[in-house]
Length: 279
Image (cartoon, rainbow, N blue to C red; front, side, top):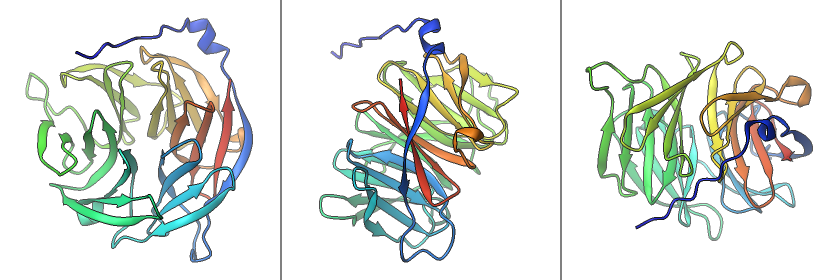
């Protein structure tokens, strides 16, 4: 039996949160000819981060303290998103309709591929299972790390389509919820672990939502392509726009949060990942 401890943070305390720019980490490799498009980021540890660079067709392992790339892996198609499963990195290759798994003990080394049934986009790993969304097929799949589909989420109890264009997925253990961003709809759809839609997040300032990150208290950081990061409460209510263009954002696409250091990492259309200290 798993004991779930939910930390309740008063809304007024969330409103006092701020993020201060503290560093830029270069993701530009000497092998890159074009501007980097960092569509997905994930933390291996407080010292190591993995990034999916769509424009360079490359998955990059980054040494955070030394602000440098330590390993690169170039798959056959562009990577969209990345997540960490145990000691491995899993990356979606939508144009190849597969997920590639990499060992990262000594650089990025291909371990295996998992074929999937569609254009896989966003990916997350929770409780040893993969959560994968497909935009063309308009579905969410929950599967084992070997590719066995355990659940498929497509339609509600009335037979209607749940998703229109899902692009990223994040699981919050604290909230017992699955968050799916839909960039064309300008919304985040929130499901319970029973696959039922709990709520939707919309906002006038939310143009094209992209990757989300969750902290241990269930606070959500939502990356929005129009130069903002939205801060959401565990109840999926808007707290405020945490970061804006004047804070250094340039077409942000991806985000991850480090619990140990309180650092927020934002991947963008550009050659750096922005690092912010959340207080």
